[in-house]
Image (cartoon, rainbow, N blue to C red; front, side, top):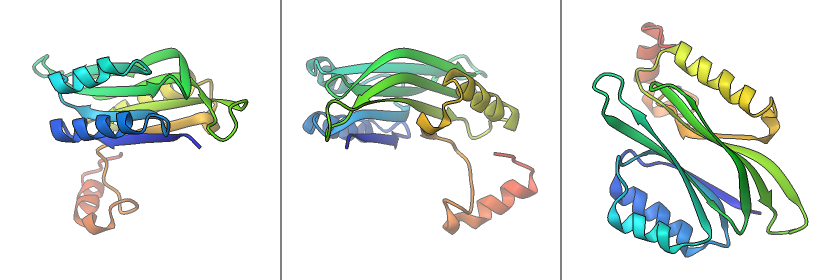
Length: 183
């Protein structure tokens, strides 16, 4: 089975470098890596790692901060060309809620004759995004993937509080509900 890594980097150069090294160390195991909230610029070392690996394809998209027009966060999707191929690349959304999607064919490690189409969607939603921004993005993702929801892998930095995935942080969830934050 091919593995896909997804990681919120939180603009941490070290987290970024660790994830790249993990991918490069065992290229036969990982088909793709989806990184959210990456540093604004790739470090020289990370850039050299990517350029030295000829079996990787890198797709990145940078969101611009709407208030001051500076680069604010980057989504990076890296695929292992030995285990999958991408035929289409889409950038969707706005400065508040964005996604990159690859129309990808994955080759099974267990059975090389078995090829499956999947849509890894790399998503970033700003902490202060309005619910309409999130809803619009999800509608665009659904439309772009041709409503093939069973083939959609949605991974991202969603910046949303919920008791479902963070039961230790019930205070933030309660606060969000009181302020009608509708993530």
